[in-house]
Length: 398
Image 1 (cartoon, rainbow, N blue to C red):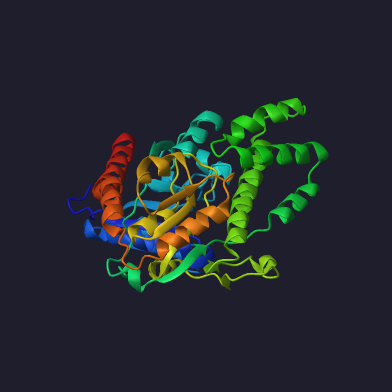
Image 2 (spheres, rainbow, N blue to C red):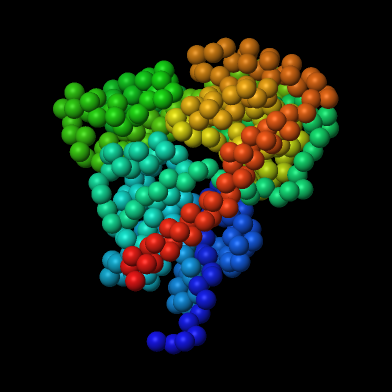
């Protein structure tokens, strides 16, 4: 044993490049925070030719404190003998989760005591604990983090355009339903019934609702590939249905709809403008240019979308479908315009545009207080929690 073991202060962020570079931009944001705590932060893109070599070299250096990946990217890496990479290298890995576990559910039950699943939405952790089999990996619940915005962005409200800013990839709901025809009739019926339930109930437990449907159809809900596949398809449909409804409501208004996939709406009369998808880092810079920020949520009770957080961070008027968590935190703020999907969206948008008429409006002090109290003030705790998790994993396995 050497007296000069290398200091373990390198943190590896694993990314596999996705649309709009969202994973990289999010990792860069966390990297700034980790650097302020004395760590060296390295981002490794596994889609590059050198990615695997960089990862192996860093792990071999003995200087890595831990690795992490948004959406669990990298959690299932294994050696040729089938042993999980993080187990073999005795390196803690933190999977940061924001989406429903039905998507790639196997990543949530990866078999390695060095893998920790960090959920930011209680609904998702509940799914992991209630419906997925146990594994040697562990789970924790972290609060939502809002700390990755460069401080120079703060455009006064009066200088912003009186427009509604909506960033979302468009998916035509009818085409998703059409695609379900590839399934057997009984599965199609379950998908349609479950989707209808999801449209009506914003707090629905898709898995708990799907299980009796499967049993009634003579199918076993114990087949996770089938159960999770059905839930993932319906969750994807509800996301598309919600964003489609909001985008259609925006058409007659001064709005900017940003993202790919919206061409099917361009044939309808519209005042709204359409723009191609933008990189994630550009979204942070552009959101401050508009007085109103619109959002549609996935199916969750305990979640708050980053579009909502960004809107409040900049003191914008935020138009969003409500969740239990957003109502709990933002209720009472004048610029929080929440709605249910049974509401008349034209009334909601008319209220938002009327509020945006006030050039001298300044929502920032009130929203800044809420964001600071509920999110920014907890940033040190967030990183301390992860450090404690890493220390516990290392101690348990030493």
